[in-house]
Image (cartoon, rainbow, N blue to C red):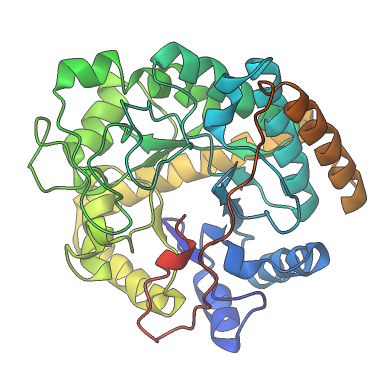
Length: 383
């Protein structure tokens, strides 16, 4: 059984023998890239190419490339602005779309299929920690217009998108990377505000990432959305009307990882309604997770049915990606062409800023390496 339900991370800029073996044997659905995996352009192309050559079915590559503080390519393409910056100057829709196209061009060059963006959380009075300057606005229509333009820019290049973080963490109490974030709003308010961008853009995107926020007025007070059937199925499918692929946020974040062993939270997240479960740091745990899920599916018909449903959605998302690629121009043959486009974009962006405003991109604050089996959480790469 291939790991059609698993997304994994890699530890460094080249594969270890352990990683090669695991990729060959488990054939994960997705590989999520982080800054720790990226040194320079040709190295990244070689890494993606090698992974795809090893798996029985090439995995879908995903990356968080938003601009601003969540910018995995920041050392290759400099100066990409944050989402919040677009509403602060002229031509916000046009420039949001242009950034989407630019990022899409870069990812196509590297053969990375999916950008885990845009963020469609709606900012409250102030952004919660971990979400600073990553949101497009403070009302649903602004977010829909700007995030939608960014998404369509990606799609025009043949790069797929994934909205996040369902059902909305813009008014959360904390950063879910390090602990629980509470969104203490009722169903009526959530439906009229937080869910609106997901409902309007979700099926066009084809994928939505479920966040780890807790919603005490919706479900159990301490239960992360990724483990909640009420959120990951009822709100997502019945209320927001989403028909595509549901992907968890990284299950090694402390907001959810403290709920039990990896096998247990994998089972719970799948039963809650998620289709692909991400474990982005400890690849050495993947064979045990896969073995557990295989054994569980053999003795539990309901669980086996849930896996089939998830695999069907995963297959449809692959088809969606293929469709976007067929409709788009071919990828750039030189990374210099991507850089040239980035220079044009940044120049135009800066000219639309209010007089006297200087844009300075966030610096990479977490650069430590990751080694399998050393017990690190990988959170240096989360933001």
